[in-house]
Length: 505
Ligand SMILES: Nc1ncnc2c1ncn2[C@@H]1O[C@H](COP(=O)(O)OP(=O)(O)OP(=O)(O)O)[C@@H](O)[C@H]1O
Ligand SMILES: [Mg+2]
Image 1 (spheres, rainbow, N blue to C red):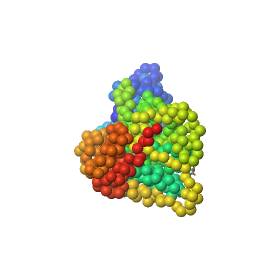
Image 2 (image 1 turned 30 degrees about the vertical axis):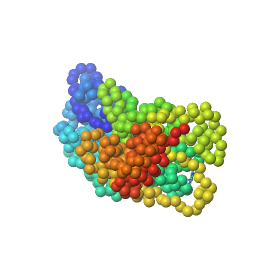
Image 3 (image 1 turned 60 degrees about the vertical axis):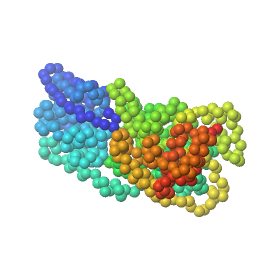
Image 4 (image 1 turned 45 degrees about the horizontal axis):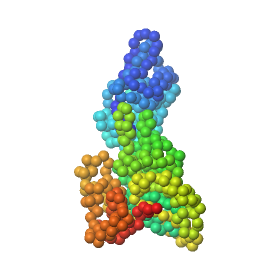
């Protein structure tokens, strides 16, 4: 259920009567079909299937069960009821889909299952061998990787023990190196864009890049992951849990160590972006948790789809309500959007004339809502690169050098927010970066001296900035100060932050 799990007890009964095999306890289609799989798996593993009235009950009965992961426990329960398997139940969790031959297939969400198993006091989990690595993240749990029904039976009867997986080594996590496809070193010029991306990465600020075709917006956005700070273990675990439930963790992978970078196409539907469905699954915004959500060709996204982003951008979680109750997925991501200033693309180019009519221009700009633009901290023009810069043979600063500065700034932020532990615990997700600061935190950490305050007052009055813009500038100024390791915000930090505000049309 979302990112959490519930323990389900499987019991079975065989009584005299005509042959019938029923599964009760609110099963969905995939669970009901498990009858055919279990029947064949039991037969083909060399066991006997009772030719009588067979009833399998999944308790609690009021919880809707979905997916094929109940195959293995149903088969084991039947073997034990018919006297073909004797073992003591009570301390193990079994899970897995069965093939007709009796092999165990991979399932989604093993990490959530392992966490719940530990919480409820179980000591052993039997999970599909392909996914078993994720369960080792939970300490104090014996994880048995399972390949077939026969193998589990042999283990339970003590004939051939399955070797449990060793616990996850968190030491290796700290040493893990990540490599990136793109690097800042190969992007010529665009120093001010790189500076803005550095600020965005340091504080997790949302950014919108606008410029003529071929100016390098997509290239710059795609190289952003290479300057992001390394994921902390806590962040890794949060992201892993989401990817485990979505089934995107990959074979034999236990932990997500690289920050997510998601770039959905502009034909994406609302549900694929924010999550949902009859059995709610995380969408792109949750898959981008603690990473980057890149929306290229921003105005081409349907307006209704984009409006869905408003609430999660503010709260960092998406809550999906269903008749059975509501559940939420974390969605703290950095939004990176790229667009052309007008349909022909050259409205902002000083040398190439724009051929769009005022009507076309207006219609284009109206595709993105004001409230959404108001949630973006950095608005940026990406101009065409001049020939001298492009042909320059000198290499630009590498991503690794920029990342070092970003890492230092993020370190300062983490230290600052960890002092506020009590306040953090009251909330659902912790504040880790400046962009996530709530108003009371801004009041505490963004204290201005009189010169900075005067500058900001002047700007708010002359540019008629909204209350949200005011706080946004303070957050941004905090990040710019952190990049310099300055404890107080100075006028130059405010001045730079003001440059990145949205331009009125
Ligand atoms: N500053 C740069 N340094 C090196 N190469 C660049 C630079 N800017 C652009 N390029 C080259 O130009 C190509 C096109 O850039 P990119 O796709 O990022 O443009 P864009 O701004 O996204 O254009 P569009 O608005 O059409 O989507 C890139 O693949 C890259 O090879
Ligand atoms: Mg592009």
